[in-house]
Image (cartoon, rainbow, N blue to C red; front, side, top):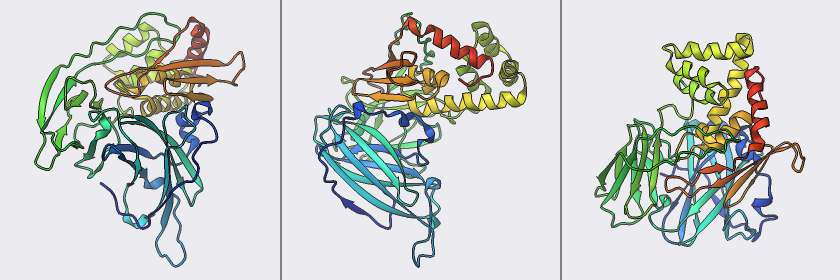
Length: 417
């Protein structure tokens, strides 16, 4: 759904190449919440084999408003610019454009949504670099969106809207009360099959552990069929916790996936939710006692007071720790909650990396100065997963053992590492 705007101007950007390959640039700002006041959300849907559309959703509280000239109302002005590349390794810009918008604060919306069309031929994959600028605050936010036009069964060939919120859906993580309207691009689709998985994934092993991770067998707990209505739309609620994988053709692996963890995700609102991430810094006995006690809230409070020495100091450390957990959920959630993932684990214990390099197959994180022998380097390899494109596996090594225990000991002394 496109929300009305007061002004739109689109122009083509002349540059045909970027100054340097993205794979050679430090992209650490992607995982640093304070890098920008704005935090736009993006979604791409394919209109046809040659045309796609980028949707952008922005929290209106993040704009700077002012009165312009004789205008009696407060307005915001912002632009959305994209560059279409073949990959992180490419310097050639295949398509680019920019759109300028204004928003009237008196409209009272929580979020404003706009969209821009762009050219992308199938069957190919691309990378979309998107920069959103608050023109009055002179602040920008840059993000990257993977474009998959490999086949008509991939997730971006389905337009997804929230029926209750009456707007485009931007998040594969759903809440139980929401109703999603799924519209396939293909007109001849009469139904879709849904594979439901009720799996509680374990948390990541420490970075030095060479123990072989237990292989997850993706066997659906149930399979059911949903019909497309006369408007070409399939309606679905996902009230049970778990994974929902929508497919037109079950022979293929591609499809559209949604995840239901709990209704307040990515935030932590219960003691049960707060205990899980503590496994990274607790002993096995401590964790077992917290999980089995009747008063879990008191168990969590007692743990933090015991390691920090007093409630005031404890509150500060707790705030930092769980802020990282929630940010890990925002940045790294894939088929499992972000805090359980390899990237989430490293982020929670060590904090945001100082340097991040990304390419089509991996991410490299550096803590400390690049090239310094005492700096920590973590390599994450992208894993092909039919449920998500955000599955990354840490290249584990015994060399991380000392740094890991140093970081954990710091947390256990009430020191934010």
